[in-house]
Image 1 (cartoon, one colour):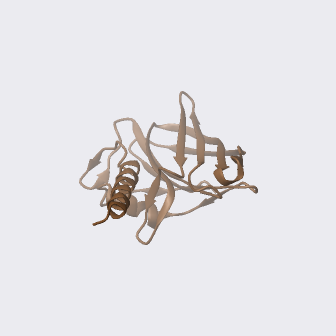
Image 2: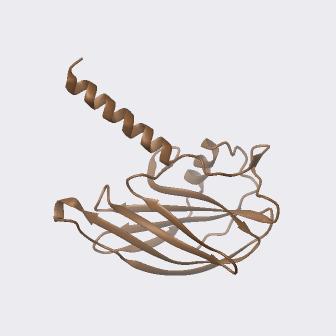
Image 3: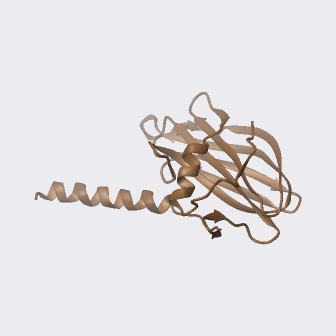
Length: 185
């Protein structure tokens, strides 16, 4: 085997390990194949995905605020992957424990740059202001926030239940029948 072939194999192995590590299972409690939120809390399941002219320098940050808490959720195009039954999506599936109560997905920031154009890119800001409630013991799927990060930045919202529940199953959540869906639309 040539030196070049060995180098290519080594790089492919490292890349594969990095992708696997970045799509690693978040900390969550599973009982009898179902998500089991900690006492007094519920789980919010939310996908963030990123498409960009840049294949390595684009990220999305979404702010989620409650009465007594604020959470910053991120997805990075170069590190995060959501595995679906047929394809992978650049992004991250969040399973976030929240105290029972009212919350708002308030806003998002994107950032992207293209190396081939001397780092040209942008940092768009998006107002979201979508409210939701979560009860203790509830597992709530909010869908996907997809960011187009390019010269015409945009956010879209969609139901990616098939892909996202597939990813949950890869993490050991075999029963999603009790997950409530209330999309952010």
